[in-house]
Amino acid sequence: MSSDPNKKIWLLFDCLDWRLHPQLENHFLERHDGCDLCITAGSLKGLIEEPTRAYFLNQIEISKKLHNCQGIILTMHMDCGAYGGSESFKDKETEIEHYKNILEQAKTIILSAYPDTTIEKYIIELEHSYVGWESKPIYVG
Image (cartoon, rainbow, N blue to C red; front, side):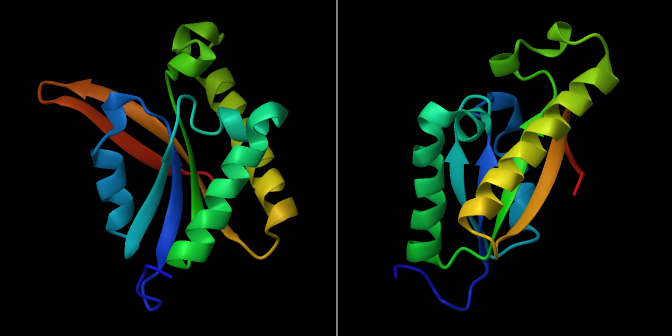
């Protein structure tokens, strides 16, 4: 194992959208000793889709094996281009429900493969201000 066994490392599934980084990683590093990162377009899109699921489950296996992964952080963000952006949804509530459903699907898939895994789910709100983009993680379970 290439990690300190006393550290509590988590695996963070996140979208590649530049508006999220490095703010989002820093947010979770305040709560955990370290985070392995699995960053792809749509964050969990590849995990919930059958053709690419094995790749994502393998990332969990690697994190557990190499870094003693203690838990998994699942994120989805508002205005995600992989899902057509916010304009693809009737309203904000519909968009939030869509992402909550994806988070729950991902959790179910992971727990079927790794039943003793601790999972946290977040929806990330994005706000643009005079200093740039601010990402705000909202815990949803």
